[in-house]
Length: 497
Image (cartoon, rainbow, N blue to C red):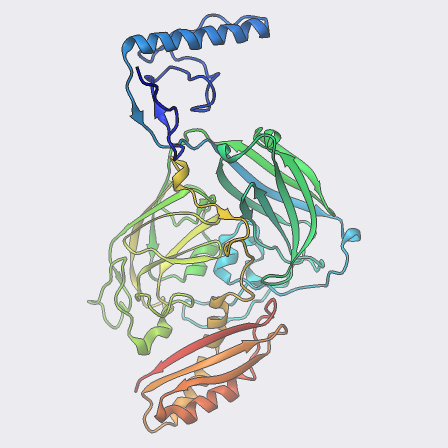
């Protein structure tokens, strides 16, 4: 009889035996698992022997007996996907010794938007310092709170697992950062003789991450469940490892109202299951599979146009009214569609979206409409979060790739929010034009102190003078100080009335 390979070239392998037979070696990762007498074809185990040596011999006899029994039943060759052996690793927090920080400078600016901060566990408590807040009437408000500390470090952690990498986010100006960042990984990527590397950085801008220290942990130790601390440069780092097993999917059902701003919804949201159907910011770990299904209709302008409704996919955005979409969801995105934010990643959801989370955080859902006060209705959503069933479903970042990089110097949503806050000034520039129909594109170069240098990239012939007026006004604005120099373009469309 020809021999069949126990694994194919993809690593998926073949199952030669019925359920209940523990396989020799590490084909399924459970060579020493107890047999299940309730499963057909399984052999009940004998009482445990006191001697470890005799116990090992007993397991070998059971494995051999199971092989014989299975062979007697006939061989079935069933292809199966490579099974994910799941560990949840959480980078919890750090205690940094300020006396050991060298060459760092005081910082107080936050380069993230309000949504990013509300979606990240370690930044929710300082979200008032992030980006710009929007009231229900669409009026912008500058951050009105100061950072709780003024420590000379924006700490973040990078975890190297072989050729894969996990990155937290920087937490500004604190010696006691708490990330609460969790990732689900497959333990089979570990080689017990290799080490995982925890690297602590001071984030100074894109491509400017100053390494403060490194700590190594053998994979063999890393896989053991429990909470641990370790020395990493000037800090004591806390991390936790949990074995996931075959966890049931987490399901959340709730309404997303159209008459509330996305940031205001997120600010007051529950961050756990909501039995009463209240709005939830859904907790998601990096590497988990998220599926969102939405239904229902909303009224983007219930008072003026009660008969106009939109489903979760939204309606086509009118170019002259693109400013009524949420900042970060403008060009190319439908008005009144279901949108979402997870960590620093913004996305359009629509009626249905399934994806593997590339970052950890709280999934925030809302309607793509900046003027929410006159809206009506709600979308009914169901969010399901599952652990990947196979290694192929995972999308871990590769070390040294474009994904293995820090956040942008200034969140694009923040730039759009600042420009929106000066909308009345820009309108004044256009009102004096004989023909106010057309387009103007402004180019912003924002320096490290938040001062912009503005140029008119493009202007309709009838709006040349209006473009120069906008340029003059915009050069006097102030942006949140970014990390490094940031460039952005801002298109504006105008129509009579």
